[in-house]
Image (cartoon, rainbow, N blue to C red):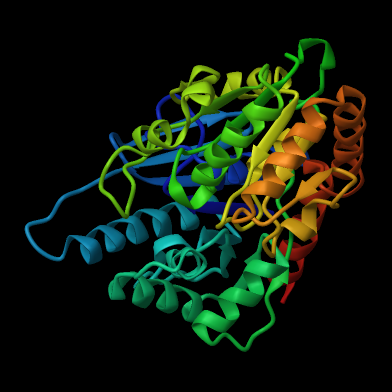
Length: 379
């Protein structure tokens, strides 16, 4: 069996962008390869055309091309022609793409096309309550309606996407998984009273709620330290730096105990998480976040949002606390409770990893994907 993925991102030094979608694809691709499934990944909008072999996976970087007019259409057709050539040469059995921006709209393949719901622009605009460009909705709907099969990384995302696009067909849910051998805990590295947020520093991730909660935390626990690790994103509502906005929210006591670190290499993320006593990710908009899976695999007590997808992964009061990101008081109380009780935070961290081991290891998720792909290829 030979499976291909089409994506704008993938964690690799020569690839320009890597985020949650790329991480989940890489984890799955490597896991499938280890189970003797041939995997090819096509990464578009890159700086060069090249082929890389890594971890048993073949990566095709497709250089971005500019056109005087109709670039959005012509570049898709260029990607389509390139992939179809490789499909024929390498006997690829099926191809998968994410729902984001509907990249497969206007593409045609002679093999099954699977769209995996990691969260479309339509989905995130709905969750955030912000307006969406009409063309984005159009492309995403065209890609979804022309797909042969649809997968989702969470049941919540499947339900919302079906409602937003009027999809009547069954959507299969296969959650994201995490490499538990790469993300192994080491509690000897914990820095007491430390709180970590990691991921893009952006409004939709609940970072303003976290800053407001930290203003309350510092009054109860003056030793508390809050670290933000991630890329500073220009805020959609104000057009200014999100970090600058966070610094304006933090009071004079809190700002002394807050630290902002730019993006770090993916290989260093695990060590940053290991050093935290508490991980707080109060996001408003996710599908099934890799950040949560990685932190739980590393035995971190979590304080997260309580929206839809959260209840498919977290268990409130056992793996941490799930709280509305609008409830600043409860967020602060949960963080203080965990900071002031190291035994409790360690216990919840252990239970978090146990939940990952029981349901969300990359090996388990790979087996579910293999079963799904065998089924669609056979049919």
